Image: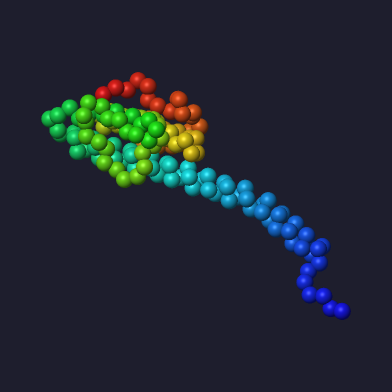
Length: 146
């Protein structure tokens, strides 16, 4: 009598091969996803830096006191000082941190992303923001005022 189908040993062998492949592939996929999230956050920080540069350029010759500007983010909500105009940019607000536009046009930034638990930092000397492993409480500009 002829039997159709697979034996228990054949099925277990296939399951074992699939488990080995999944064990190898899963860390690679997770690392790729984390890198993509970090790159996206860094791109958002660059967009905010560009928006700050544009803000400075638009308000440099203004008779009104628009600069310096301090933007504070708390739980994804931006707070601006002294009824100054908002930064114009597309995208999502950072979870927390600050952006500061100095009177000389330089931009300082420390913004935090809670999903990847990293801080995007830009000092006066940096041309572009970079990521650092700074906790949320320390990811802010403490000595800046409007």
